[in-house]
Length: 401
Image 1 (cartoon, rainbow, N blue to C red):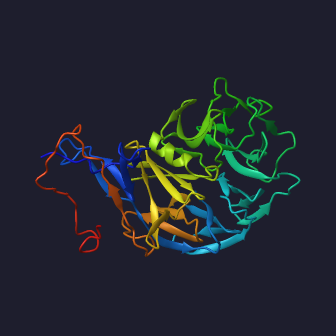
Image 2 (image 1 turned 135 degrees about the vertical axis):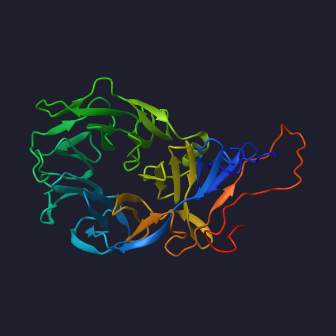
Image 3 (image 1 turned 135 degrees about the horizontal axis):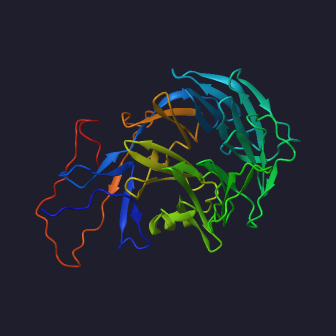
């Protein structure tokens, strides 16, 4: 019996006659057994269940520190407990953008609305860094005992005193000069500091010199990122949305100091159609042996997910008034043996799990449009169609349309 390639990712070409594959709220998986019934199957993506409700229009950041969990929702910093309760720890400036959060063993550093805050973990005391010391900070990083703060719209990042996020010596200021771009974003990876301009990037490391951090020879990449919060650690490397002076809107991963394309023409076509891509927000997570790069576009109201295990893309969405909008998550951490995600549309923090069959009480609709059946324009006859579906795990009868 001829097989139809029902399972797969999304690939909607410029011409639907060429390819119109569409996958929403499924993820493909290749069978690793020796003699599977099918080489590839579709599994349902996880649903959402409310874990705790925070006050605020959206959850702007969430982080795990050892066995503790902290989140920023609206203007408030919270600690989230394992039983789903939460404790207010202080207030921060809210500009509507994600809050950048990093930690040492003794402090949590937060950049929110351009202002930097330090939470002492032993006492839960929140300290605001004066604007005369740090101002207009967009992203913070922690490497080798030092906190680093990126000044938005400049080529400058600042370095803290060792193990002290409240102290920022005036001499520990570095200006990136290997390319003319302002530095848009930064991230740590393998004790190295990656700095992204719009069209180029460069990598620094702790050299032990008086300057502390300096450029690694041969580390300049001719690819950058215009999306501050699209940069994420996953699969032992870095992923980001970016481009170069010739054009934007491709998704990359680092292979050493070489950018490697992971988007495809169909994904790039979709991204280029969005009026705004600089607001893209990414988070990584790993579940069921799949490493996922989740890329949320607020203005476009879309969520795309890249699966490292299959090298495929698919969409995720939330069903509202019969239409899909972006998946209700924009930040993630794994803590209390749970995947917790923060909602962009409320102060809700959800547990994301394949055991949840809806999205916090809303129906979780799944769609798969299979590829074209083509035999080089020859007639193909099918006397019957058999779809192999495992039933009994959801509503009876299953909700198919």
